[in-house]
Amino acid sequence: MTTLDVLRVFVGPDGRGGNPLGVFLDGVRIPTERRQAVARELGFSETVFVDDPAEGAIRIFTPGRELPFAGHPTVGTAWLFRESGAPADVLRPPAGDVPFHYDDERTWIRADPSWVHEFDSRQLASPAAVDAFVGPALGEPGIHVWSWIDEPRGIVRVRYFPTDFLILEDEATGAAAVRLGAVLGRPITIRQGVGSEILVRPQPDGTVEIGGRVERVETREYSLPQ
Image (cartoon, rainbow, N blue to C red; front, side):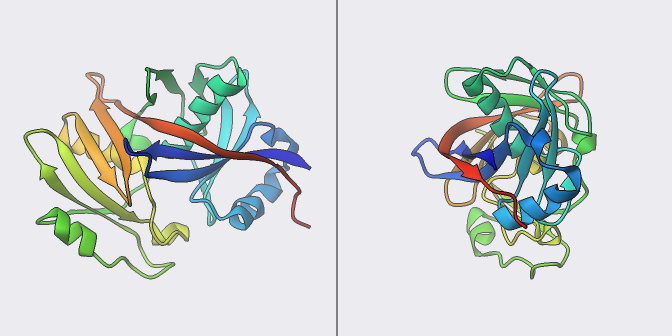
């Protein structure tokens, strides 16, 4: 038996959206060889196992595989560290150190775009085309589609179908936001899924900051599947 925190990450300004995330703050209690099965059983797009809250050591799993870095899990875990009093100010997934900080509304992380896994990203003609796009079948190569809503103001409409990670559609994707911010080279606001919002700020050193609102859905006891 252990404790699972369920969060929504990148909640929109009207309270809609937000990508569900599972976080085990005492993840060290779950053996490494059991973690993939746990992530699959929970069914979130990502589940985080915190191995050392003082050092910020974490591991991130989708239902299909482990990721060296992902955006909404690091933003959500950083928020939960503040809520729980964990002392770290840097997260350490396998990809590298991920500094984080907060403002009045949002939690921010900074990441290297080279950590983001390769995926097909296509600019479409309009937000309506993004909304009408039909994603691949589960298990096929994923695709990320986007369009400008308002280019002068830097507002973008996005949908992402990480079907190769055994996820039909992601509500809000921080890693893809890091990559898009690096490609465009300017601050943008991403509107993804049914109502999620991700703020993206490229940095002079080539890293990219992403930020968003986080809310707790529940904290519950969790028994390891047999």
